[in-house]
Image 1 (cartoon, rainbow over the protein chains, first blue to last red):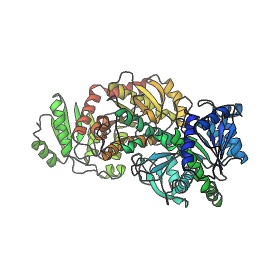
Image 2: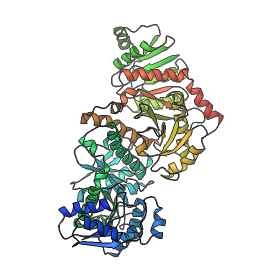
Image 3: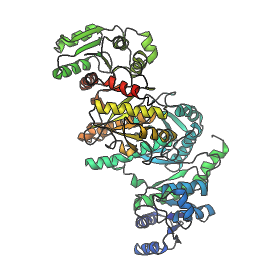
Image 4: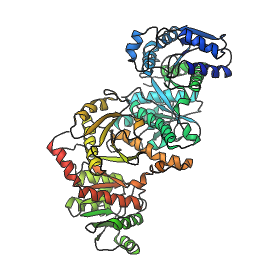
Length: 317
Length: 317
């Protein structure tokens, strides 16, 4: 198993990425090879300083770097020697089994969609976000903001992809799938969710529990909460702002601390053919460790095959 | 000035409505007549018990009552002697100047749209919701859930209506109008907000400050936050759920207490030709008092004329 990590991505790279590797290696088995892509001199120095054994480490030099606010497509084209571009070359070529970055989100998405491509039958790959719940577990909000305008079929596919992730990676048995709506009853909502509801209801790959409302998002009414990316993005950023709010108010509460989204690492692009994990720009050591662990789990559980089986066995688009 | 109040609407009616009247009369001038619509015997008894002077009170008997979960259109047709149906008859006929109810929201909307009708030039009346902000003031979210599918022109009209309300009723000078979006830059978002942005930018009746994101909703970046009713409803219900969350967590915080939406009373239907105010079903005394005060202010400030001037002077639809 060879997991590649962009060492230059994120506000605190490469230092926090290295610290994350330290945390990961302290727990990991010895069958995992980490391919670290970035400025070779800087990365090697940091590995040395942090006493990381080089046995299962491969450093791949990247002479360029895509900055956080560069235009994704343009940057990928103009910087073929950037850590993100190299990461996708290695993943597409089969030299690595997963690619992780906390760098430019747009460039990561473009790379995932165009270098790696969607699984056959998936018309729109998606990205989810974790929503902390009072019972200590995480809910999954999907789509978290890459598909602003959707068709009913897209929502239905997000539901399937989210359900597979919740089952195989988050470990929920028969995860509950809810459709975010403005009322509980079938028939409520805008035209999109009215048309999506019957599709989710008939989708044999999910355990559809019906509509959920804004008030249910922070509860555990559904494990996977499905919406188009516009609403998803607004909901996610509002949830993220709760942490700032309680910090400013000086509120100390164990559950509210979990709205610090930095701790969750990243989340994979769902529906593409290989594991691509995108982290928050602000990722610290724990986030990097968690992202490597998610990649490991996706490979271990053969998650890509699980998605392919569902989407090729039955056309649910 | 004659303000009519549905005494049978809301979970705690008529008792809390009567208590709200007590609170209101303790502060009010003596030029306001209150028309109280409901079960005459019950209402009169309660007025007596609470020592309310009958000088400026008119009780209008309603032999029927629309329950909270009845189908709005059907209920209004089948119960012409209900307090809501009578309320709209009196308002449409000019016997009263405003109508307030914490009863069946759907029936109140149907009454507002069909008995009272939209102001000329307003293609879709709307309803807003207050969002408490850390600086102690209230932001206005509009549309809060009655227009699930919107055209760009609708969002632009919501912006104008919300701006007028923020200026004349909430008292903000030159209120800042923000478009809820999934990014800050112009050009971001789904097709709807991409098309709405230039309309708001060119709208001479508002002080447009650009896009705002989910993380800005609980801040004071914009006084009026514009979106279609689907997103608005999800955002509002998520904000409302924060109060339950902090209560369950045992968090005592002055600002978080203000997420108890019950205290804000109701909000008028914006864009209809006469003041119609819809309250939360759970309204208590303070909410009823606040609703009467909003109606009073709308009449005092000639708010209906302000809306008509803008929408007839220039066609901004």
